[in-house]
Image (tube, rainbow, N blue to C red; front, side, top):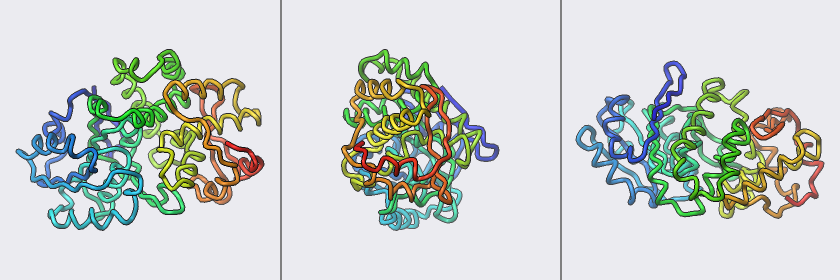
Length: 354
């Protein structure tokens, strides 16, 4: 199946199909006519899929690759000189391309390198984690982390094409399937009650497998529509941050070494909904439904920290503008909205253990 993100001159196709990696060369050739390709991957993913991609591309392109350590710590400024050096050594020009082959860390990092190298070279996303397939590979957000917070340095840089192969998820371990389900649940919460009901009805990820292509497509399509309406994250696109204000700060607090992104977002979705219910901003019962579905898919709902341990990082959040903080809440499942507030929203509950 094929979707198109319609952004004028920045439009691009998204292909979702089992075993699509075997056709990567033909599909990439539809949108890219350059000479050289640099594949950026990590030491978990490249041994599994690097050869398949390179063999598929080498008849049409001069291929090079760079393998980085896996994990969130790689998504930092320390990794950029190594990527730039590899691109220079490979003689990558502005008519060439970078492929991000991996999960969200590689997609964000390689995308930021592509956006900044020579003021921009073409960029292709081949996401291999569930989280990246349903969320981070689409929409053009690329970034690196700072010690003070996640994604604090970045750009909007749309890919030329996205190739999503649900079959590769068969090699993911259970924790990172659960991690991706955090973002799938988010899409049900913010825009699709039917998707949320489907997740409630099934008792495990295994029972969802026969619907996986459809579920990925639904999540991607929700994001596609939102990005088309708000490419640069000034309005409707903020809805995609449901659970992220608390989630990012939890990740940072533990220096990206305890909760994964999807796990932290899961905690954020539940805890922000509890707070919103206390304030009468979310319908009663919503947090309980979120809790039930998080438990179904092996995701946490608490991190056992007092709120005041997180509020300083929230002050640095990109959504905290001039003292005004935009947070995403739910009226009900499938019905989200942006709530303008301030850091006081959280500071009133500084002693609360979340």
